[in-house]
Each structure stands twice: as C-alpha cells, then as structure tokens.
Image (cartoon, rainbow, N blue to C red; front, side, top):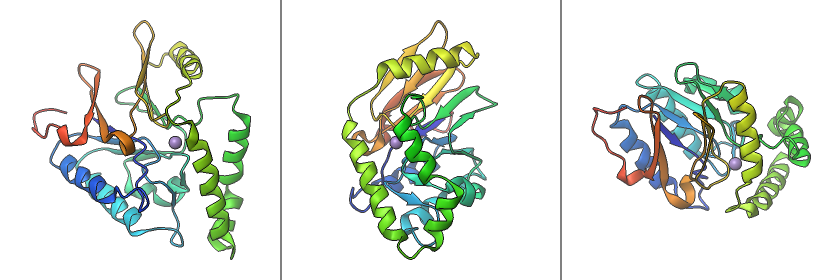
Length: 237
Ligand SMILES: [Mn+2]
C-alpha cells in the first residue's frame, strides 16, 4: 500500500507535472493507494472552482479504482470532496477512517488536537452545508475563497514543528480503544510513536521531500522513500 500526503499541488508550487508523473509510475505497481489529504493546495470540489489538475486527478482515481483500492482523506485545504466526488474513490472520509481490512486508522491530522478550539471553529464555519451553498452561488464567493486561502497560508507557518505531546496523547487514547496502527499526514515531518505493539506514524509531506510511504500489510512495516525510488516490480504489494 502506498500513502501520499500533503503534495500541495498547485500552479504556484509548480509541481503538477511531477505529481502526475508519479501517478503514472504508481500505475505500474499493484499497490493500493491512500491519499492522506492536502493533495492540492486548494481544492473546492465544485465546477466554479475546479481546475484542470483536479479533474485530471479525479479521472485517474476513477480509472484506477477498478484496478486497486483508492482511498482519500480530505485535508484542511480541501472542501466538499466527499459530498461531491465520492464516486471517484473506493472510499473517502472527511475525518477518520478505520480500514476494515488492515485495521489501520487513517486521518489527515488536523483534527487530533481537541484543545485547538479556534481551528475547530474555523473548520465548522468553513466546512458545512450553509458555506457550501454560499460558495456555490454567492457572487462574492471567490473573494471569500481568497480569504480562506490566506488563513491557511498563515497556519502553514508552523511547518517544521511537530506537536509530539498532542500526537502521543492521541495515539495513547486510540491504542486503548484497540487500534494498532495510525497513519497521519498534515505535520509534514516524519515521526513515529510506539506503544507496546502499536504505532502511530506522521508521514513526510510530498511537496518538500518528494517522499511517499510504502506499507507492507504482511510484515506491517512502513518505509518512506522518494517517489522516484519506488520499486515497480509487480511481485510486491
Ligand atoms: Mn494539512
């Protein structure tokens, strides 16, 4: 299984061509793929805001889900995907997904801090049905979107910082519930918290490192490598 997170693909980041080259390479493997969120710098899943890169990506997912599992967790830079685009994925979640086959808990990571009330309020205000209708029809919606984008850029200033205590606490609580493996994006840095037999992983962002993560469902080992180093022999999964 391949995990990709925080690619932040956009014209501004000039990484669209490389991202789709990577998807071409993944097609040559037998891996399932889980996208852990913030794959695009900003994605509002409605015709008014959608760019060619979003449509190209959705086509890729729809096509590939006939051949492998394609999972998606919405990031904090992505809006209304589950409502509008779920047909393109094997599964999609707006928060957490406990995978029934592998018993892995997948999440983006923006929701693990229960004390982060200002972010939770921001999220409730931006990710709800009323906002969806406003964004869909309101004449001034594009300026609102620019505001949201600015807000998100501000929160990006924390890049490089990992809230170890928050992650460890989240992990401990989930381990108590019987969850063995947790995979998160959002923090852009690699980190692993180990319980007795359990593990929480924070995965490296694709945008700055070019890294993806490969999870071996049999040995239960996770390795991260540059996408260009991905082994395309078809005997592994
Ligand atoms: Mn994020």
